[in-house]
Length: 281
Image (cartoon, rainbow, N blue to C red):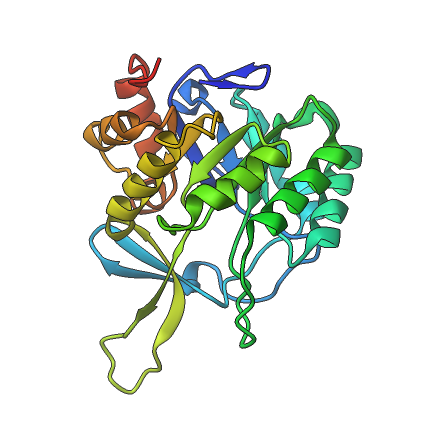
């Protein structure tokens, strides 16, 4: 898969990477995408905020903690760079100035250590019901591109909305993205077994998300206006799942929930799937 001037050696990539990876084989990956960071840390839960809804489905609580970009660069980035594969930092912000600020920081403090960034686009989680628009996606992508320059790889990760993802993807393409990722988390609700415990609002990932993610990849791959390569992400646990995303039009996949549930899964699938070629190539 070609991302600007960067060629991935393998269609299997790790997303939301743990800061300390255990085991071998990660040097076979196409790329490593970090956990999503913000400019300022957001307090909250981490491991305690991930609920296992069923065997292969997770719900990440809304009050999940996010690390800040400074901690990533100073403490965690060297651990991920040692595998010798491209590292992309996943970033998010509440608005365009926030995306510009964190991109400027990464350009200054990480420089050429990182291959680029993943721009994590999320629906505002407020009571006002703001609408996420293609214009916002375009302007956020432009802001990051202007700060990082033409050589950095920009991947825009979009929400799991099959009926709207094409227009959002066009915004990313117009803003200067190199690739798209479909998808991020699906808003959902989990009811704990304890009937006295409050419901847990958050984002769904894993097996339950896969059919929606496949449809989103298919939508993007079958729009003649879109020319960007696509990462499929959502519920990849087997080599067959990798093949399914490639059949729908993805050029590579990202694995997050599977790695959290089974550390080392991504490295194993990279060994199994390194020979696979997307159907459109």
